[in-house]
Image 1: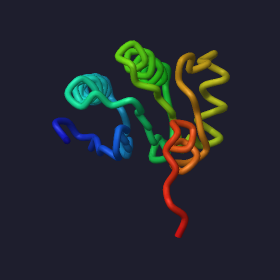
Image 2 (image 1 turned 90 degrees about the vertical axis):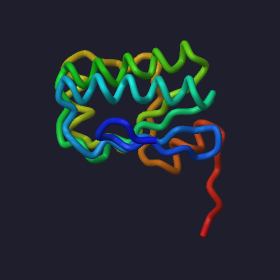
Image 3 (image 1 turned 180 degrees about the vertical axis):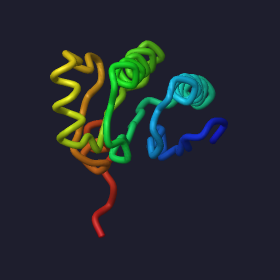
Image 4 (image 1 turned 180 degrees about the horizontal axis):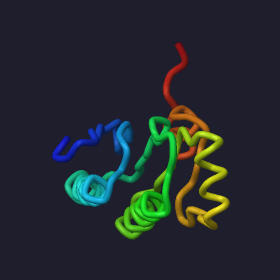
Length: 122
């Protein structure tokens, strides 16, 4: 599914969203709407948001990510944020964002494991 600029993939009962572009206001709002619509249509129980492509996060993007996780939880979907760079983590801490309601993991494998999905080893 891809209505906006950010692709949304389905892996079993989990949606995978890889943010590879800067989230400007209109793009961030479309991202949030697309994710919530995908959850509604698919009844997904997990959401992984990969932000490894983001070099920086401002307060608006941090708010959109946290709100999307909380909204997903209200719809019965657990959210894990993966791929956070050290400078992004430092910025979020300095801004006072705890990302309440959103779990975090270092990478996609760990994020899927947090949701109870284990990918086969190669």
